[in-house]
Length: 232
Ligand SMILES: O=C(CO)[C@H](O)[C@H](O)COP(=O)(O)O
Image (cartoon, rainbow, N blue to C red; front, side):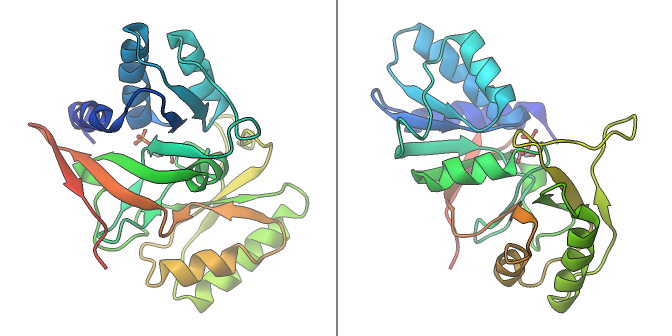
């Protein structure tokens, strides 16, 4: 992972921003580069409004003076800029390393387009090396986790499924006060099928697979950034 590459992706992303736009603001270190650069433009007079995908991003955007709104007031956004934990050639993503996958997916799908910002380490042939985060309601979460494992097996995915916690064994809570299970599958042969099946399990709120949502990836390199469109 390269911080310089992340910053290069964020710099290139600013070329897509125009005055008057309504923007989804992602979560994570790559998205943070973008939000900070956007804050500089806003300070220079750029007129945009943002919907943050997490409390963390909301706090940062507020600190930088970026005007914020929410999806109730502004249900259609122009572009969401967000990071990813993995992306493949079809621009299918694994997201949720920072635990914000639910709001990230809601905001991205309320946008005319989602642009993913990444460094080169995020580009993979097959999704799944990064543990897939699945957000579950705390009630009955162990049963839900067993069903996740069963469902995943039917899609050729095996591997430990572990509740995310902090350094003191306290369960990690999302902004919506749910748990996250990290599923170490190694490879996901059918991301689309797995994503649909997981979301049918009672207790699963959503999972970190973003399928047919991103329409462009900006991958930062050591010298600049490459634009990648989804391959059919
Ligand atoms: O999905 C996310 C947060 O839920 C992030 O976009 C993802 O984890 C990438 O983070 P980073 O840019 O710090 O590598």
